[in-house]
Image 1 (cartoon, rainbow, N blue to C red):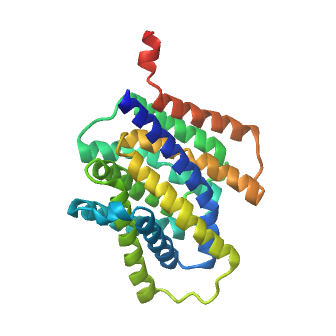
Image 2 (cartoon, rainbow, N blue to C red; image 1 turned 180 degrees about the vertical axis):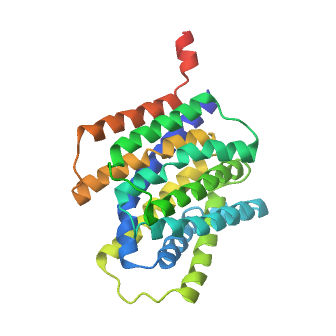
Image 3 (cartoon, rainbow, N blue to C red; image 1 turned 90 degrees about the vertical axis):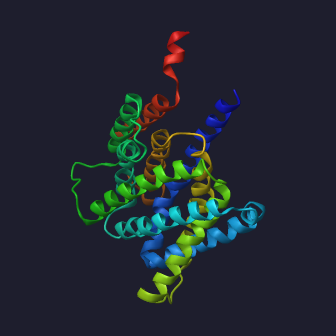
Length: 291
């Protein structure tokens, strides 16, 4: 019973993380319009590490060598992946990216299969495809083409699939809170070095850009990434990917509210399909049907 409660809380945590990331598409787009990619990452992840160090200083103080290693591995992967998403936003829209990014729902089971040598159940594949179909109804238009922004977003999805799988492996072995601190610190330090060496210094700091950075630092990173790191200790990679993919629904509605995108019956149908995919993934139908 205790394990079931932990899994339920993990599911709720992943859904909350998805809601945070949904709003992050718009924040990311605003930040990308005002600042360079590695400057955004330097502020976002160094600031997040500072917050984590203050909020969970006991966990950081008592961290082990394994916590450091796990955080540095995930931080290095994040350093490679995150700028791809930021750059992609310069060539595509937040609502379009919200759909394309969630192709990791389809990729994760295969990455997990390759890395862990464990074939996921058919339900995981069906839920992933169903979620992707619903997201497509919400976000795609008939004119969708694989342009530069789309291609970069799909590349990020592939890279993020590896992050999801590695997070699932490492979070079960270490303290996820300490791991999160070292993950953000690693990404932040690498980003600081990169922006100092290769990017022009920011000279203008508009209020909208600063607000977007604050959202990315606090909500998208300290809250969402930490929730993911902790939650994946108690659930599978494929299951996590399906739940996290609901970020696209939130991302689309943020586009509707903030950017005036039209709301149509197709959007409602897509949302219901995504919700069905989540139910398929999280509900133990076999046990229900036996009763």
